[in-house]
Length: 393
Image (cartoon, rainbow, N blue to C red; front, side):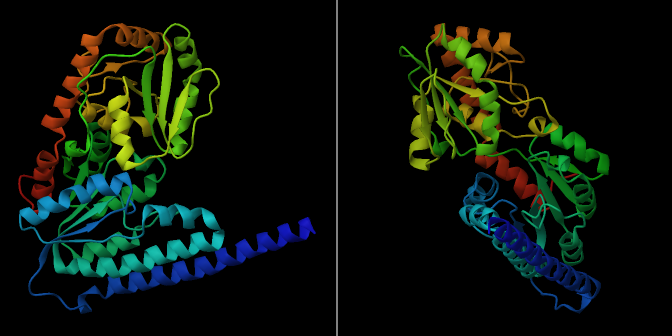
């Protein structure tokens, strides 16, 4: 009976996949036909300023930091815009993992919705695209929607804040051929995209310091409260550092504050597990003594604009981290402690545990870095210039 059920389930998944391929290729054909005959579409006499295409789902960090934070500034500067959202982050996660049928329906619904949104791009002077237009589909190699967008809009910006080219190099290389400008969140990513001979503009991640509670008290209790936060699939980096943290715990009592959708199980070090909640998150950051940023030496890590690091700095929380995915202005012993091996991790913990003034210095300098280089208002000026085609190469 179990074997028969397994065979039925497998055949059902194959059927869903076949239906998905038929729908997918039918829509791709439709997009190519519209691209070919785009000149038949009615052209508006008056155009609005910019159409925005988030890749990140509504409610995610990438959507909030790269789009929502800027909307009041666009309105204040009388820049007309349309934000082309897809689905919420919760809906994306639920439907991606619910069943094959649910996943394939999600892909098709995204593509269908995007076709309509891209057709609206002819009514705007600029188009700002985060990463790509067919969000969440893992196996795409031809940017058909981007080719249509190129026919409908004369000023296109593609924005990258992660090294997404690691997993989809062919798609990314083909996509940026349609760009007028490539905006990047750090110089490491920028160095990669300069090979395509397109203007590359630094567009920093913006941090809204109004959300954070700046640290005032840098005293420590009997336990050093060590803060880590991240997505569940990034927790592996924390787990890999647990043996080191256990060793440090033998001489410096630690308490781990972990904010993640998946809790950390640990027998030797006390752990407080929390799911992300906006109201509680900033209080937890403020209550910590040290933030830690453990990562591996990979292209993906080097291309990150690590949000947890920005959270630490914006709180004035002294931090210890590896030299991958840090802000370009990160300076060892000035606004954080940068470590490369186990010995340096241990030394950094010992140093911060006993030196309150160093904790204060690193925290205050980190917060000042955010205010001067990563403010919403400063970052918005870059966005305004690239969508209005001013002060660009």
